[in-house]
Length: 205
Image 1 (cartoon, helix red, strand yellow):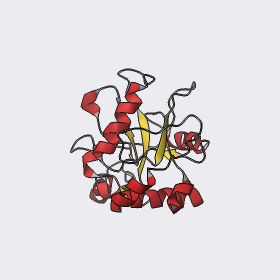
Image 2: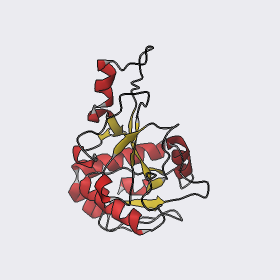
Image 3: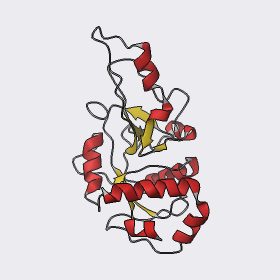
Image 4: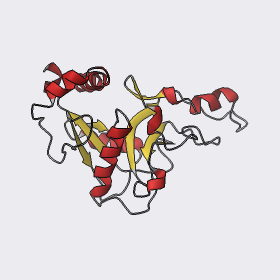
């Protein structure tokens, strides 16, 4: 719970206080083993790690649990497009993501309100609106900025049984697919964990 509060504080701090962030990054953050800082991100108080486990890509919950082993890291989140682009360039440069594969990496942006089909397998107008509401995709209170999405059809392009409440960067080695796409959290396409860690001791600085 403490780490959740600290990460939430860090996200809020980056959004509202750039001067304070500049002071913080003068200190060296302590990254857990296997994670590293990414030059060029707007958030150098974070550490990142991209993993391609031997068992292959995972569903959202499995990836979240995987990251939790790194000092309770979370799945990656972005402050804005510049931040996302820097992290993505770093991830692809690792050369460990399958080339041309749909399997990319999960992010923390998630919709908490379900929008399932009706009993007759149709999607109500209310639930269709929920699926396409970008303001519902967030991590803590940080809503995914509009310029993070892959195109104008995201989220909410699926009107069938796929209630896509989670988000990922799909086809990561294909430039045309750059940006967030919404996916079902389990049962369909699997992705890899890209973990993000915030040192809680930095929150007090």
